[in-house]
Amino acid sequence: MRIMAVFAHPDDEIGCAGTLAKHAARGDEIMLVWTTLGELASQFGDTSHEEVTRIRREHGAWVADKIGAQYHFFDMGDSRMTGHRDEALQLARLYATFRPNAVITWSDDHPHPDHRMTAKIAFDAITLARIPKIVNEVGGGEPMPPAPDLSGDDAVESGEDVRRLEAWRDPIRFYQYFAPASPYPEVFVEIEDTLETAAAIASYYRDFYKWQWTVDLFREGRAGAGRLAGVKYAERFNLRASHLKARDFLD
Image (cartoon, rainbow, N blue to C red; front, side):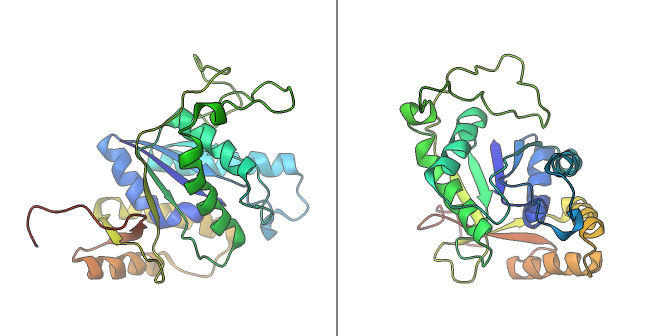
């Protein structure tokens, strides 16, 4: 199974870090994707864009290593995302390269516009990635950009076809962070075995951003979700589907 987690800013992935780590431990392929560098964080002050990029690559590499994932940054502009087709097309090309079976992203109604726009393009990209002429569009006579880099460094992956992408038409299950107003069914993932990995990632960002909360509060939030689902610790999502799949028996 291949899972892509698509978020707007580094730290957004905290809400699914336990789930991603659990799947990675099972042997699934995981890719963390951020649509922006989160460059407007006050911690950066007047730091140059090049230095912000370097720091964020360090953040991405650390978190991806902790989870057991690949990672990729886009640079769509912190608090400047529009949700337009060109943004979705960039992501669609990454879908066509990584070929995910499931995507995790933000809810549709989050107050931050980058979060909403990231959820929008993550959903739009599913359709765009299915169409060969779209994922291989050439505009203005310019060559198609190189295939997305999956490793987190500047090099094109060995053997990548930088000329043409194959459309990705397999079904993609679309998971979103839980939102009380969502019309879609809830899904809980039990994360007792990977809770401490998720807590370490939360602590990593807490130290960078100087957040005023404790890791115990983080654990309590996962325990609260677990109580709803009948397990010790859980993460909570909505699955963008009309109904959950049938089960063999009631529980």
